[in-house]
Structure formats: structure tokens, C-alpha cells
Length: 80
Image (tube, rainbow, N blue to C red; front, side):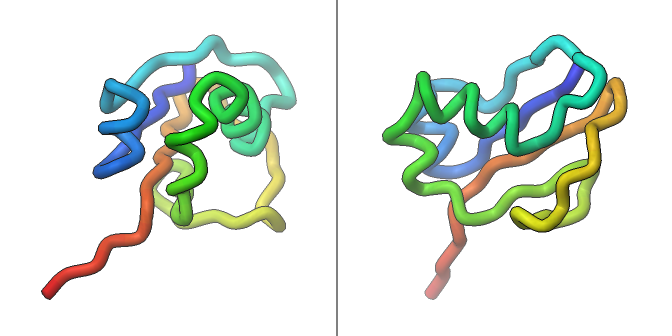
């Protein structure tokens, strides 16, 4: 299983803070993003930060996920 977490406004728009997806050999974080974006386009418009197993990633980071990986999608934070 892959654990997927959502934070802040992304979680609010999706209506949940986490879900689990079945592990498939060769699965990348981008595959998860694309699958979820098709169902929750309005939430993924806000995503600007992605982390895999606690480490921030970008489009250049494409290795397959391990079983039991954790993927996080969140928007940028601003404070004041």
C-alpha cells in the first residue's frame, strides 16, 4: 500500500487528509498525482509541494515508489 497525505487547502478541497492506494511495481509519485488530479482537479490546482517519504521531490525525481511509501501533497504556506 502507498499512503497518500494531503495538507491544508488541498485536504479541504479533497475532503480528506489521507488515503491508501494499492502498490504496483513501477508506480511513481507522478502516477498517483495524475490519477488523483483526474478526480480532484480543483484540489491539485493548489499543489505546489510534493514529498516522498519525508523528502521534497520535483518532476525530475522519477524513481518508482517502494511498497509502504508515503506521498504528501500540499500547497505553499504563508504566514504573518
